Each structure stands twice: as structure tokens, then as C-alpha cells.
Amino acid sequence: MKKFLLSLTPLIVTFGYWIADGARVSPWATRVESREEIPVVDGMPELGTQTKVTWTDEFVCGIETPLAGLCLTLVILTVQLCQKRGLKNLSP
Amino acid sequence: MNGNDSMKGITIFCAFLPLMLLADSKSFDFKDPKGVNTVIFQLDALLESINGSAGGISGKVLFDPDAPENTTGSIILDASSLRVDNPVLQEHMHGKEWLDVAKFPQIEFSLAQLEKISRDNRSIRAEAAGKMTIRNVTMKMTVPIELTYLPDLLEKRNKVPGDLLVVRSRFKVKRDDFGIKPGEYLDKVANEIEISINLAGAFPKG
Image (tube, rainbow over all chains, first blue to last red):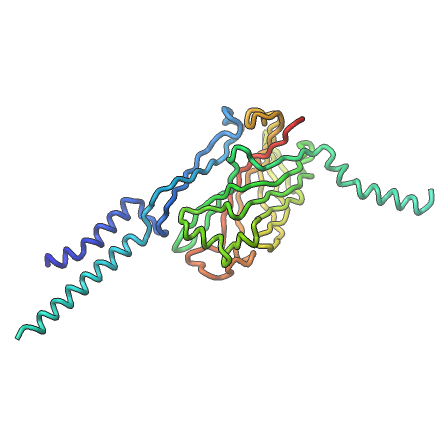
């Protein structure tokens, strides 16, 4: 049981990290877009605004993260299962 | 005056008619030295939402505040300036399979005329009839547009005397219509592309 719970660790950790980083369904992002409304004419917002877009380099976790955790967990579980079966076959 | 002369007169009149109509039009340049002019786009597919923007705007619009129906011109977008948050996705978007920006470097909306014009304070709302060209495929389109004419306010924005024209619009295009992988990857890359523009054009005086 302890081993089974330990094998779930990669899935739990990556899933938690993914949730904490915004649960982005799209792939990993390495830059973030920020939008800011600025006046068309400086100091006169009543005349209307324009959207200023700025890109900054930043890593945002994507759907690959929990998927990688799931794969790692499945690999560990498979190895554990194979080991268990191997031990059973060795015993008289 | 014989028939030949009158024909000549009509020909000359017809040749100069567009110039006469645009006599009071001002040519607004949309290449923004402040670098704020941006096109924002969104593709909302079932599995993936792609958001991005593009800053490589240029083009000129002839606008007469007293006769907005005669507004003509074109807005050009440098296709290689399209950006998304994932560099691999951006590479694919610029690549041969999708937009092929090396072969088709420009996306252009050519404005022929304004229809259904209504005025609201400083703003003019209308339907812009024109042609959209993406990947060398040209389609007739009519998009809702809002123009705000700001006389003598260019100096406050760009430190140059002149007028400003702000163009706002939000519309959708379908990538199918422009032959961009029609019918493919619809679960990840939506067919409908929502485009939002908010551009300031400058007419410097003197």
C-alpha cells in the first residue's frame, strides 16, 4: 500500500503544480501577454483608449505537466507490478 | 463643339471624378511610431484556445470628416508579427502549412466604402465594405467599424501637429474561406478567428 501511494506522488505533485499555475489546457507557454488600456491621447482617456499588448518571457505550465506525471506514475506502477509478479514466480 | 470634343470632356471628367470626390480627404497613416497599434486575435476551439496579437500594422486611409461615406484605403498587417505564447505553436502558425508568412508576408483589408453610417458624438459607426486578403486569397467582406476623428490632437500623442483617426472593429473570419487547412484540426484550431482592432492613424499637418 505504501509503495502504491508513493508511485502516485508524481501524478499528485504535477497535478497540483498545474492547478496552482492556472490549470491551462493548452501546451506549455514561455511568454505571457499582458493587455493594458491606454488613452489614445495622453492624459485624455475620455477620448477613448487603445489596448497596448506587451509580451514578457515567463514559463506557464501546460497540460503536458499532469500528463507527464500520469505517465511517470503508470511506469512506476508497471515496474512495481512486474517486480511483484517476478517475486511470486521465484517463490517455491 | 463636336461629338469628339464632348467625348473628350466626359472622359477627362470621369478620370478626375475620384480625385474631386476625395479632394478634402485626409490621408491617415497607420504606421504607429509609438508601437501601440495592435491586432488581437482569438481562436476558441473545443480542446484549445489560442490567443495572440500582432503589431506590424501599416497602411493609409483617406478620410473626409464631412463625407465619411467616401472613406477608402487599406490596413496592412505584417504576417510575421503575429505572436502567440507558445513558440512552437507560433512556428507552426508562420510555417508553410498554415500562414506561410515567407511566401505571403501581408494580410490586407482594403476598404472600398462605408455603408449604413450613423453618428454618435465624436464617433462614426458604419459597415466597412472591402476585401480581405490572406494567403493570396481575396474575399469580399463587410465589417462593423467605429471611427473617431480627433482634429488637432496628433501633437498630444506624437508631438507632431495634425489630426488623429481612431479605427475600432471586432469581426470574425473563417480560416476555411482562405484555404488555411480547411476542415482540419478543428478540435484544436477553431475555424472562426475573432479579430479585434483598435488603431490610431496620423495625419500630420505641414
